[in-house]
Image (cartoon, rainbow, N blue to C red; front, side, top):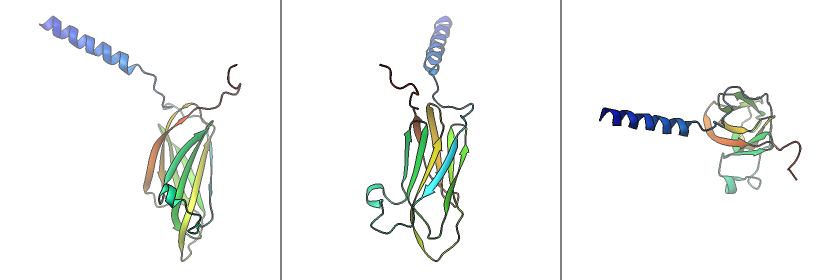
Length: 154
């Protein structure tokens, strides 16, 4: 019985090793050099709002070639806000932190805040988004598949 138990454990260890030998698609060791920039809309009035489609304060992540786009639709901030983002590398992707570099007014409105992260290599990235108060808004995984510089094979 001991020999059978040993062979069973050895077989399970072999199966686990085969399953775990999958290629990890996370660029964990060192993320590539990247650059980032952000833009924001003007204060939006009711007719400009994407709320009917996206909901209030929605986060939309998308990719194109070597770029991740983070859209914070209908971010509700001070009317005189000048929203910039700070993008920080993490072990599995990026933290995007919104910062208000404007001044205070006596009103609030909705903005669309968009951040672009450029120059990425193929991989799966975890993106976490934080508002100007440091509150965690949302997070998600995005897959970057840069366009082949030589174009498709013929």
